[in-house]
Figure: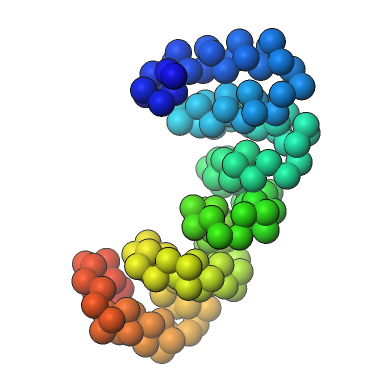
Length: 168
C-alpha cells in the first residue's frame, strides 16, 4: 500500500476515500489520523482520531496516536488521559508506555511519569530513552541520590550509552 511504501500523500487520499465510503468504520479514521500525524498535520489529525474513538472508544492505537499529538498542541492532560487508557488496554506495549511517560513529563506529572517508566524498564530493561527519562524524573522529584544510584546500576550492568554517562 501507499502508506507502507512511504507515499503519505497517496495514503492520505486513499484513507479519505475509505472513510467516506465507510463512515462507520473506525479503522479508516484511525489510519487517516495516523497518516496525517506522520505528515505533520497534527491539528487536522485530531478530527479523524476522535471520530475513530467515537465509534470505538477502546481503540488503543488511536488513543496512542491521539495522546502523542495532543502535547504538541498544549493539551497535556487530555494526552495523559488518552495514553493512560491506551496503556490500560495494552499493558505490554512499550511504545504506548513510553509515550505516556513523555506526556507525563511534559505535563510535569513526574510521579506518574516515573511509575510508568519504572514499569517500562521492567518490561524492556535496555530501553535507553526510558532509563534516561526515569533518572530525569527521579531528579525532578528531588530524588537525586536515587537517580544517581539507578544510573550507576544501569552502567554497572553493562549499559554503555553516552546519554546515561552524561546524566551521571
